[in-house]
Image (tube, rainbow, N blue to C red; front, side, top):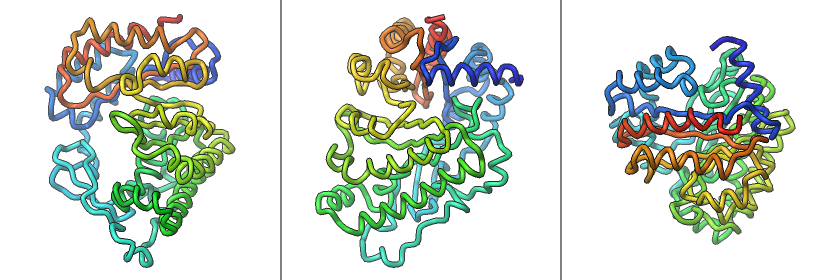
Length: 357
């Protein structure tokens, strides 16, 4: 992509976030690493080549196809993250689950040492001098200098370290060591934010972790307000003070948490469409905050027809978008989606990107 194209994409993205009449809706189609061994490689490459709005750099797609899965997502190879959590997966390219929680027993807390944000992220070592020279993660915001402190940074990291049921009991009992662990996490996360702001000079800071289940949140609104929200607010304020756009990704049903989340000064909220409901998103969020809509991966795109996929994307654009901006859309392709449907979704995303132009 040329410098002129990058600048145009950058301007369009910023105008979308700021409700300043962008030229088109920013659309991102992400192909998960596992797809390259579940689908015919050339078929995916051909689909990407046929959709230049979504995939403007064919060479980048080819490089992604040839890359090995990250070390944290290798089937049959347990991965220990910098916090001591052991992860296992059964499919190359798919992040698995934690099978060993380093603080499953509080008896081990006194000897527990957090990682150093000057040396590592939540997922592995980082060279900040090299990071400052790199273009940043290849995501929808690649036209901006961007940083992400890593999926599972606060709430989910607690469950990785302690175990989900243990954390819920800790919160219910107001376990003081949970507060101390939260302080460790926040200090580490704040170090990442400051390194990205001060050493890398990012304009966009991503905070990603899932808060919802299929129905309802993973923790009560009261526990979110008491334990998680204050840390979110301080971290996101530090990013905002560094002149960053604050982007939050959270899968699942967020409806009971949304008022608390919006108190955190979020600029862009990535949330799932059908889990939360398009009508609810329209009534509560459209025009109030920039929405990055995570397009359904459970029902319509996996089991529907191309016509139903087109209708879904059009309905979402009509309900949630406007000529002023405030809407982005993203889809993550994972194994199991018919290739015909993947192509239909690419068609619809390109077709409706310019609906308001």
